[in-house]
Amino acid sequence: MARAVTTQRKAINTALAWAIGLLIFFPILWTILTSFKTEATAIADPPVFFFFDWTLENYGVVMERSNYGKFLWNSIAIAGGSTLLGVIIAVPAAWSMAFVPGRRTKDILLWMLSTKMLPAVGVLYPIYLLFIKLGILDSKIGLIIVLMLINLPIIVWMLYTYFREIPGEILEAARMDGAGLKEEIIHVLTPMALPGIASTVLLNLILAWNEAFWTLNLTAAEAAPLTAFIASYSSPEGLFFAKLSAASTMAIAPILILGWFSQKQLVRGLTFGAVK
Amino acid sequence: MGRIVLEKVVKRFGEAEVIPPLDLTIEDGEFTVFVGPSGCGKSTLLRLIAGLEDTTDGRIVIDGKDATGLPPAKRGLAMVFQSYALYPHMSVRKNIAFPMKMAGMDQAEQDRRIAKAAGALNLTDYLDRKPGQLSGGQRQRVAIGRAIVREPSAFLFDEPLSNLDAALRVGMRMEISELHKKLATTMVYVTHDQVEAMTMADKIVVLRAGHVEQVGSPLELYRTPRNTFVASFIGSPKMNLIEGPEAAKHDAHTIGIRPEHIDVSSESGLWSGVVGVAEHLGSDTFFHIHETGLAETITVRADGEVSLTHGDKIYLTPRPDVIHRFSADGLRMKDELAVA
Image (tube, each protein chain N blue to C red):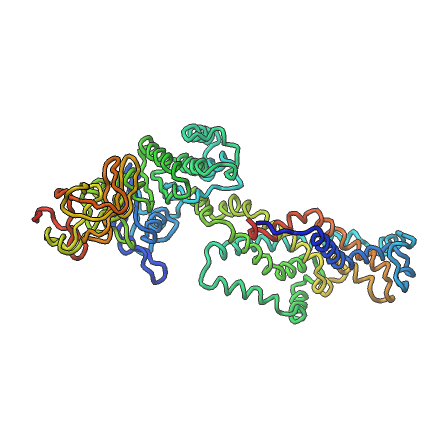
């Protein structure tokens, strides 16, 4: 029997959901609003919401002062590269853990997560020195490797969960049909796990896009992505909230748009298997 | 060609020995059924033949070649799974084509074989659908189609009908039997349903806890079960097993009488009892009879409609020539020791 929900109850639930949604979205909304204000309005007390003189001046200044295109390209290369590399490594790893588990598989999964429990700053020094030695400080390839390693446990965990949903008999059928390991993964496993792989890719793109600790510490000019672009508006000459907001808006816009258009896929992937 | 020989095959999962050393020969073109209660190792045995499980010890020889260490694809066998195991993201056509694609067969030959298989299995109109849009019976046909296009040396079936409803199961049973007659290819079929085993098999292998209890044609198993396990597993309803003084009269520890080998009367007979449940099927009537002093329940099959019902007194007379005698360890006793 369906649960009876009164109209009043429904209205309260709707209002509550909207309130929570707005609360979560508010910082982003506020950043976007501020980016269209003058510096004076940006720090006005009490703050103004919608009724101010909208201006594109901040965007003009930011575009003039920084090479947005280069930062954007670096972000795309680093987030995209690290995610792609991570998925290529994680698919076979998750395959073996899901379909030929050993006695230690569960331990390995936990052990992989344990690297995420370590504060990043704890390994900054050795990694920094390694980067200098290898000559990959302030290079895209260096950041791709580091971000890939950081997100790899999450990618493996997510793929592992999705792969577990795939009935083993189908893979056995592929083996009977003459598929080798490579064909099995390419023709059967990957297409079947596509929703899961897609949401894993999306989530990791977002994580890598917004990653600020390593990108800020290991880059200077050459490989600096959009996180560095935002940071460059935060300190030396004091805070310019409107310009900082404009830079932030420009930095998050691409990933926000990507997230918006793929939200169906993202939700489907994240609840994959939970509802059948 | 598809002669499969198992030589001292052993399978252990960790400490547990699922298949103790086992020898078995499946002749070319034979329809062999592995039957037994769940957990008897019949599916494991099939998977060992398929190569989906590694043998712990022993040899598997297919067509004279040692296949023990070969991967599944190299054994020249095709398998139909209980869950059909179709590729959900591929159309029926692509599902059927998959093994040929993996074998690198040219497109024209692929198309020819798909058309032939689809025609034979009534799938021509469904070739461009996805498995999710098909009924259970159609999915099963696609799985069979995928198996036959490879022209394997043997087919392996792992309880292929257990997901179908009863009516469909009878139909598919016939189709698989006809397919076997037409192709004359070796088939190895796993089921827990003794009716499937009896109706389809050339040879039945009865398994219990990994051991082969008996190998033989359906009627051999029906007529001369080697022990009480086979006796009660083959035949429906089950054979009545009677111990005690009645068995002693026949110089045996246990005697077995099939329900269809007992004559029923409402007036007189060798034994008497009270009808517990009467199942009137029209063609037959089954009585479950209590208070006979022989066993808790005696099951009897009578031809046609018999009007006795719950609580009625009933008289039974076993036919002496079809009484099976078993010793204390459950083994069949030789018939020439004769009836008292």
